[in-house]
Image 1 (tube, rainbow, N blue to C red):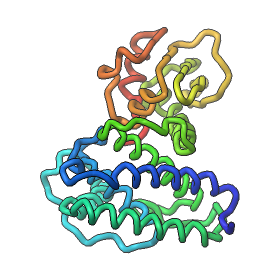
Image 2 (image 1 turned 135 degrees about the vertical axis):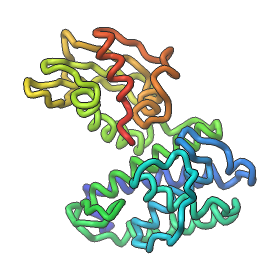
Image 3 (image 1 turned 60 degrees about the vertical axis):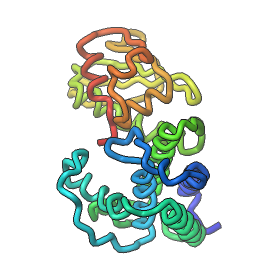
Length: 274
């Protein structure tokens, strides 16, 4: 295997999730591709189109030349316009066209990964033409594909893989965004400590701390007197942190203790992905 050992977990997680997606959509009849998913504005077809499109970009394929309609309510900024291009260009593709392109893309990406010899620090072209390292690109692909696998599972009522390799990468990716949520977006005061106690298929406890300069950090050490404690299940944590639901919609699945104003501000700002 030529893939750098640091990159192997991301390749394994991507493979696990992309094969799960393929298995989920292979038997779908035409109408099921139009089912609404928790991803704002996107159907099952749209989610799969996004997955295909982003992996085609990892392959270095040219982006489609396509004009977006002006009435897409969920597209409000340039990042979303960039992402939507790969989706909208496939909106009229049939079920066989979708599954065929997905399978072909998986074959090509697997071949690419088998032959990958670059270092994790190698620079590659990311979304919007931003430069990023190969490790960052592969980690985000593993995260993104797992999250969209969960979108599809919700839409198709086929729960599963909440503790898969992709889930563990998603946990780390989402937790990395929590200091910003607490310190910047929710405006927690210096000296605050917020405990996240998550149970279910993935269990963990983390403390987000705000230092004297107002900077946030996160660690696994419990806080004896936190300003806020949030206890929730892993699936709810993911749905909140990925912006799939509002805190009000899942209030019965969240136990809160501590400063009510700060609690409300954190839950209102909980989405890490924008």
